Image 1: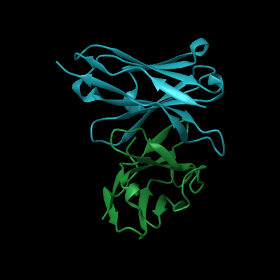
Image 2 (image 1 turned 120 degrees about the vertical axis):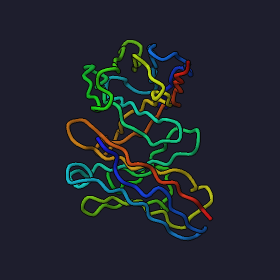
Image 3 (image 1 turned 60 degrees about the vertical axis):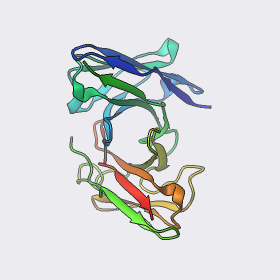
Image 4 (image 1 turned 45 degrees about the horizontal axis):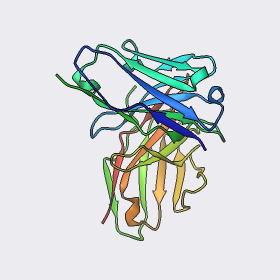
Length: 121
Length: 110
C-alpha cells in the first residue's frame, strides 16, 4: 500500500529556513515523480514543483524559484522541500503528492498528510 | 502562473446535479487532456476524483463525471449527497512539466 508520510509541523521565525520531508513507501520510489503543493490558510492549492525521483531533476513554478530547493534521497525513499528566508506569507500547509500510475500519470493519486509551516515572530 | 478560473461557490439540494467549471487557456486546459479534479474536506489532504478529463479512479462513485469543451473543463456531481459538501479543485498540465490548480469551489449541499 502506497504511503507518503511527511514530517511534523514547524514554527519558524521570519528569515529562518525550514526543511520538510516526505517519506514514500509501498512502491519503487524512483519510478514516480513527486510534486509539491502549497495551501495557505483558507486559500487555494498552489503547485510548486515537480521532481524526478530517479534523476533529481526539478522543475519549479516561477513563483517559487529562488528561495525553495527540492531534493530527494533515493536510499531513504524520501523527498525534501527546503524554504529559506521565510516570510509571514509562507505560512501554509505543504503537501507532497505522487503522480498517477495509469493513464497520463499527470495527476495525484497519493498525497502526504501535509505539513503546517507557521512563520511567526 | 495564474490560477485556473473556478466559481467560488456552488450549491444544490440533495438529489440534484451541480456542475463546476474550470476555465483555462489554449496553453493548458485547451491544449492537454490532462485535467484532474480533487475533493478536499477542511483540514484534510485532497482526494483525486477525476483524472485525464473524464476518467474516474476506482472507488469514486459514478455520480462524479468530468468533461471538457475548448478551454473549459467541468465536473458534474449528480444525485447530490450531504457528504459531497467540500471544496473542489481542478488541476491542469500546462506544458514543460508544470501544472496549475484552479481557485477552488466550495460546494454547499442545501
